[in-house]
Image 1 (cartoon, one colour):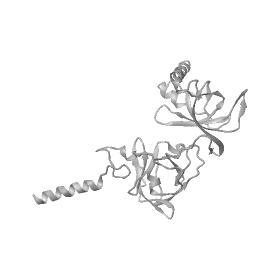
Image 2 (tube, rainbow, N blue to C red; image 1 turned 90 degrees about the vertical axis):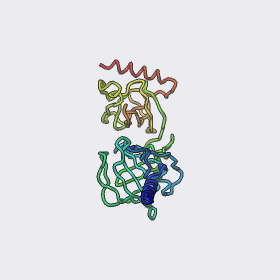
Image 3 (cartoon, helix red, strand yellow; image 1 turned 30 degrees about the horizontal axis):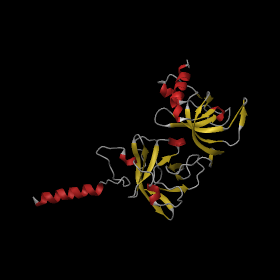
Image 4 (cartoon, rainbow, N blue to C red; image 1 turned 120 degrees about the vertical axis):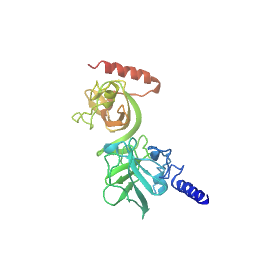
Length: 284
């Protein structure tokens, strides 16, 4: 009987050693079979602090550069573990990290992609670069891992800050607007640039509508604008870099000419939706 009790006590202690209710520890698990709790985190990131520390790394969720993959995130834990994965499929890469001589070093990680996220790490270890004055349009800070940048939630830029998008100098806006006319969606701020298909309408109409123009009543979030204004066909405005829902779980990013915006009014959301559906239903 004594032997049985010792075995049971050993099992209980083992479970307690490897389980925790602290989401900042890598052994946290919300429940059996749970594949999502690994990515839970309260954002306490201090963008005014420019010192690299474990507390800083674990205080946020780091999102991969949306131009590479907007669904992949990176998390650090207090027990020196890091994980990279997608919000949908779960963690794909897991390893250890340390801060040494002011550098962040990743090591002991698996190089294979467990969940098909389309992202792997090379070499046996890597030294990461952290930048506390990022030129990114959305975030003040960035962490670069083998050429790919991650941005911390909690370091978002505010309106009126300067940034660069593919080498183009812009000033941040960070406000929602609504289109009052049809406007083409482009990869660059020129009339000769490639057009982008608007996925949102495709999702809204079960694939019936495929268009490269935003319709009247569409709400978008203007991230930034080129300070210099242009006159195009008698309409004066700035080229704007926008974020818009793709109608599913992500966003699209690109350029529009900003002479066809009205300021967004949340009390007119039903009016905007009605106007948009009217526009979409008119498309044959």
